[in-house]
Length: 413
Image 1 (cartoon, rainbow, N blue to C red):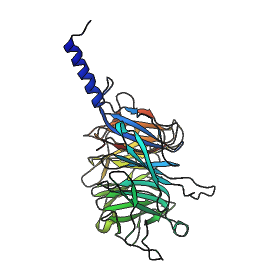
Image 2 (image 1 turned 30 degrees about the horizontal axis):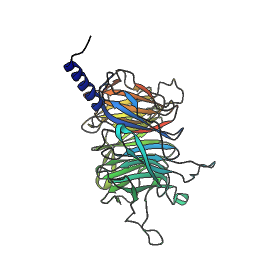
Image 3 (image 1 turned 180 degrees about the vertical axis):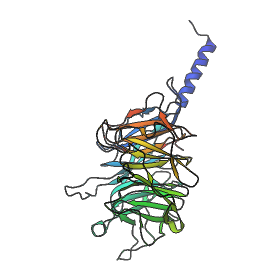
């Protein structure tokens, strides 16, 4: 059958619009970009997120070299124009850092493609976590080993100013403390063996796994962190508790404890209420037991609307281990947690999940699964918080193994 001239023009317009919007016959337009760090080959895998199905499609030239050794997490500048890869670096036979950790900066181009810009070293060694502030002007990087680590065992936060035009980083000196020579320190010290931090309001809480404490800082102007308390906040006891993640939601702070107990064999969630000077106090209802048939909670995330809390259960190394799951809870007005009523809760994911994100349109959640190198996608019910499989398959291959943390961006401003 021969198309009329009008028919040919109409079809051409439809095809053109599909190209512009990133549409295909198999789904909708690209609603966001995802980047996943992989430690096995020091790479970053990039994916486009389909709005209609939540399906993930690999970006052009993905995976990309991470710019360093052992990439463990990724931070995205507000607006999505720059991505920061945290490369932890390597260790010698005695477990001491070789000092080769860095922050690699990438510009985000069309379709989320990454272009390497430069690398920057932090004040300490072995960076493990990073986040930008709400305006995208500063990057906070957590080092597991501060410059004085040999004598204190402490970590630090290195602060960089971000050039919004080039993505270049500039070290922000600590205006509060000077060294013995009278020079401003170029870092902000935290507690022992820190693993992650979270920002809540004007407070930044660092989780110290070495002594089971939280180190609080206030967030000041010009990238400065201010000392709000003269000491760390004890949460548990070394050898008894195993603090693995911290999450801040409004008037609540949730900390996961992976240590099994007789009443909570799958670990616990410890709810706290933030107070003045970035203090924390135990909520009246106390610890919340992880759901049955779970193991080793290692990460937690609240949804964008702060209605639900999701806890990742890492489980074991057996690829058939059903304990790799997501425990889901409703956050009540008081901050108390109630398990989401669903026979499928906890929800199965790939093996060994370590990180979790919600997509920019708030329709889907994804986990990075370290043991099998996959990503798991789920549809999130905005009313109930229940999770269900994506319509066209929920498992996506990122690496052969050892996927670490992931990050998303909705667009590039």
